[in-house]
Image 1: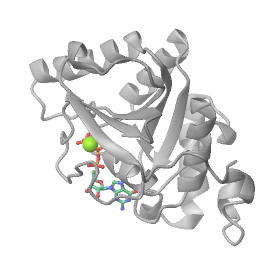
Image 2: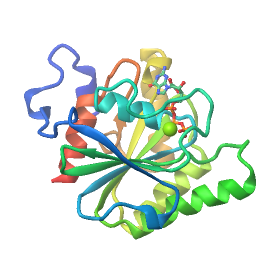
Image 3: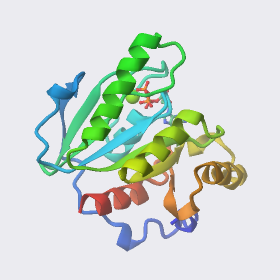
Image 4: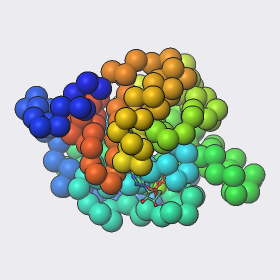
Amino acid sequence: MAALAGLSSSYPPPFLTTMINYSKIEFLISAFAIKQLPEPHFPKIAFAGRSNVGKSSLINKLVNQKKLVKVSSRPGKTQSLNFFMVNQSCYLVDLPGYGFAKVPQKLKGLWQDLITDYIEQRQSLRCVVVILDIRHPLKELDFSLISWLREIGVPALPVYTKLDKIARGQRHKHAAALDAGLSIGPEERLLFSAKTGEGKEELAARLEAYLK
Ligand code: GTP
Ligand code: MG
């Protein structure tokens, strides 16, 4: 998969064409507590990562909308579980970011509880997309989240984002450092940019496989 990302002229190859119609997406609910969650009938993909890493931007790019999910340069923008229904068939769930130093300890605990309770309950949760900034070394919280997902048997898809912010020649070095930290091979993660859309088709294809 990683090798495919370099084949820009014929990219995406026909087999990456997806069936999910992301243009039919609507905001459903913003949940601040587990009891507010929608009925667990439809499969779900959740998007997790540190504050400001680009979770909301990634979702907007995936569904081709500029403002479906609120994006901010100020960390801590998303503070609840935001459910978006796609095509009356599945949900995308934007999770609050973790690891934002300025959030008071008490609130930090509440957010973390909300995220972990949600994932533990995980009714029809098919995959957690864990978003990491390709520019930075692996942080402990990201490692802990991915290790915990492995332990409890929830598929995790690491996505290294903000690809546009580093020189093309530096990609491999940065991605390989994160791969080593997570003990994964390049085929187990994706590279992405919410600015250029690079990696979008591949992400859509992977998510589709999880939703089937
Ligand atoms: P919280 O909701 O606060 O946890 O943040 P988030 O992870 O949802 O991040 P958000 O999508 O709000 O983006 C944070 C900032 O990073 C914004 O200023 C975005 O424009 C910027 N950003 C996100 N993804 C990318 C990317 O791929 N490339 C570039 N250049 N900027 C990005
Ligand atoms: Mg957000």
